[in-house]
Length: 104
Image (tube, rainbow, N blue to C red; front, top):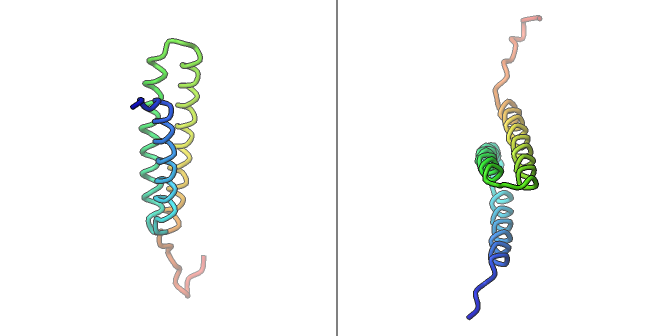
């Protein structure tokens, strides 16, 4: 029996990850969207570390530049994700209501 090509093996894992990710995100209840986003931001932070390691271990210019681009894009994703999460959490805070007799 022939060995499966590593490219095909990686492609199968990639397609399965897309399938599982799609169903995990779309089947979550609305109350859990904010924690899910926070976990996704933490995973993106781990991706930054991986991109830094990959860029540091390459010797070619193309690899280092692609690693730098990966770090930059993941950093933008983490920063933007935490901003959106903070804004979503602010929507759920109770607002102080002024007494009926008070004026500003």
